[in-house]
Image (cartoon, rainbow, N blue to C red; front, side, top):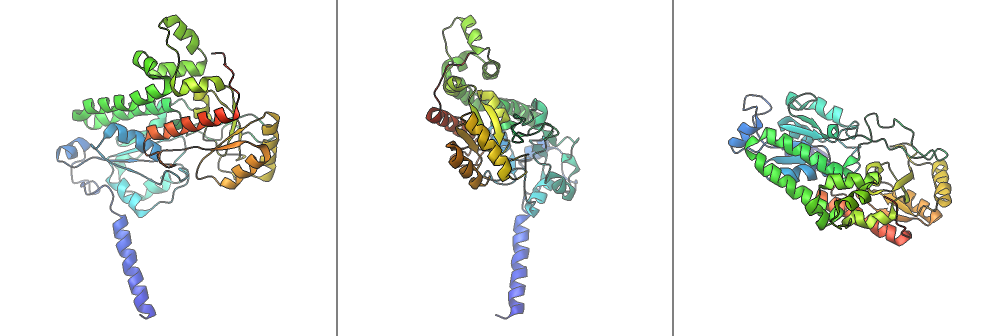
Length: 375
């Protein structure tokens, strides 16, 4: 085959691949705005509403509530950095066909969303439109602030709207699931009862795993988890007089409250606050800034001074940094999930939470001497 034939074959292949990539949520008469403009109407016509979410952990929550009643898509893979996404033609097509865009917010999509929505032709899902949803509006934001450790800590104000990694806290995940339930019920009112039942199916396993089945049968998991975080749970349980103690993941973690940890990226302020751990610092001098030798050496010195034995590591972060810090401190590197599908056997939101809880509990038992902490 001569050069011209090779080039013709190559261009033909590119056109085929491009056409395949453009297939998104399927034809809905949405792009030309001549078809039905309402998701409920399309659902009545046996065309599933199209919902696009920005991350895999958010997809796990929406999928748990919606079941098979919507066509659901997310961008990127679970083991990738959600801050950094290459825009593909298929993403633009999916956004064009979407009835609802749901984002984590707090800047996690800031590097790629503006370009994506600029290339899409769907005014129904832009900020302020009916089909736009930012679930961070239901979350009290934290900044990823840690101590000023000779420059090893992050400064305040790094995330203008607050740290975006709140879904690593399962209680925030439950709150977001409640928001999603209300929004889907508004979009598809005939399915509101089913969505509410799915919310219970999402929340109940988390409640039992977090605090034990006995407490879960008597008390709201958000209330119990908030009191655990505030240090008032023991006195509350004593006042109840039913003799039930905290069990589940939080029951196991209670003995290790106050343990100091480090991480590679500032993923863990919500997670660590929920379970009672303290973050000393991160490998990055600032979020998104690669670690420097000077910064890591300062962090290592403080880890040695405070006997820090645990490093939380995300799969997309360069493992060489964790290896370097571990070798110089003796700290154990724990393979954590920064979102759903980040590691094997974490296909659902519950699976992700379970992985992180079981991993941190195992790491604490391996490295720490438990001492009961005052509630």
